[in-house]
Image (tube, rainbow, N blue to C red; front, side, top):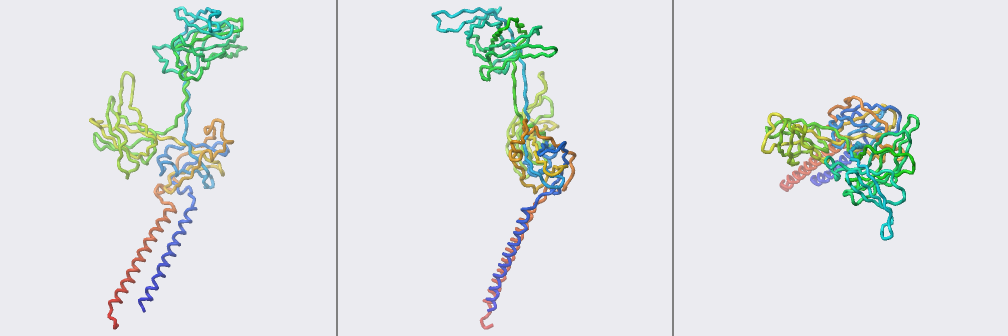
Length: 482
């Protein structure tokens, strides 16, 4: 009878354990609502803004990339003067560049003769034959009855520039300024063989007008945006004018090549080298970084060295093969040259292991430098300044939103994000200390506490069950007479 009572008491212990488990979930639910404060971050910097604005743009200081826990910068925040976090977005920095190259063209004035179509000709347009002093002859059929005022053959210097490598966007002309104002219309043709001509511009205006000390000069001709025709070797310039004023002779012609490109700005990260041997070295960054490019250059002059490169994404990872490349530094007649950077495509890298193949780099290790994309913080000017940039928190979770979600289309500046008022970061200050880089969040602490509680309850339950079984065994082994 006594053993039966003890067995019935055991479910009560299970119910107590379940109650303890339910209670353990309460801190976990409460931890989900905990907001980070500036003291939860390793470092920070006060932000300076020039004028009130709903939105600001901040270029992150370089040390932020090195002192954040997460490579994607999720542990970055902006706080207002009340210590409240404000809404923000991260955006890569695009750098738009425009380059112009002026390529000289040879000029050949052309003499013209016209021949009207006869009845037997299928072509009903008037034919013009242009001939240069050197004997070059060009035949064109042109609509209309206007006689060209002047004609010039322009040629690309093939000894310096190849037509297949040059694509003109404009032809720019020059002449000696005259005392009289004048205007004209230009028809421009292109050809690669002086036989087949393609019209590139029709009735394009040219003018040179003066009024007092002011001068209005229009001397460039826009070219059709056809990829192949812009790469012609020969250009025929036919000038027409309705005025009786003589047009100055063209004294100079240039082909204009305009190259527009957009590149993402980057920051430079230098690895800390460690010598293993004269043929092996290890390079490390303070924290893993998503790299856009990697450059390895020997320190010794006139050195060419094949190397095998491995990488790892954290100090705990195994080495993985990256590539085999030839790195060099050469000083020659053409100047100083180094091996081209390797494209990394945002590969997460913390360390490199470089081994020389059939050679060594002597007493000085090659220099390893990486690039990662630079980021702007776009934040809402909620609350009052001064604002505070904070970074470096192991417990930091993703808090950014998309740029289009942050800034309505109606509020976007004509020149895009570059038009937003700039915020500037002051000197870095320590907020919560370096321990914030490894501190666990309330959620993680609650989960750890819950795990230990579960293990404790499990051990207690097993021990209790063992005691019950032991007592039952003893009672069964006792003589029945007792």
